[in-house]
Amino acid sequence: MRARAPRGAPARLGAPPRGAGARALAALALAALALTACRPLYVPLVPTGLPEPHPTRLSGGSTLEAGMGGRPRLELEVLDVARAGWLAVQWFGPGGAEAASDSAWLEPPAAAAVFDLPADVALRPGEWRAVVSFEGAILRQFLLVVPAQEGGAGAKRSPAAPPLKA
Image (cartoon, rainbow, N blue to C red; front, side, top):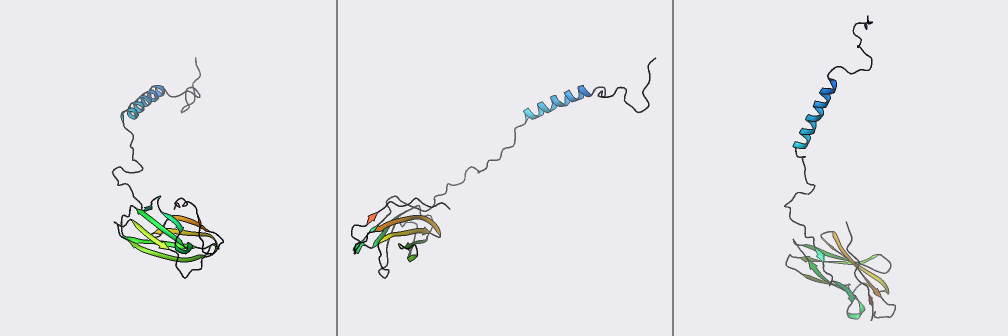
C-alpha cells in the first residue's frame, strides 16, 4: 500500500497540476494567432500633407565689398520673403564691438536691399563684419578685410560665412 500525503498537500512535490501544459499551449497558440492577425498601430512623427516651410534666406549673390572711398557696402538678394518684416544689419568693427546698425522694411515682392557703413563711423583697417537678420532670425554673417592703407582701396573680400543655425 502506498503512503498517502497529508490533506491539502500536493501529491508530488514540484509537479504542475494536471492539464496545465495543455492550457499553456492553447494560450500560446491563441496569442500567436491574435498577434499576427492585427496590424500594429503606427502614428507618423510628422503628419503628411503639411506645407513645406520656406524660410527667408539670402542668395549666394549677396556680397560685402569695398564701395565708394573703400567703405563697406552690403548688397543683399533676398529669397523667399513670405511676409513683410524688418531686414536688419549690424556692423562690427575690427575690435569686435558693434559700430553701427541699419534696417529696411521688406515687402514680399522685394528682392534686394543695399546697406552702406554710415559715414559717421570711422573706417579702421582690419576685419569688418556685417550680420544680417530678418525679424530677429540671423540669416548670414559677412566679412570684409580693410587694408592698412588710407582709403581702403583694394580691400580683400572673403566669401560669406555660412548661415548660422538656431
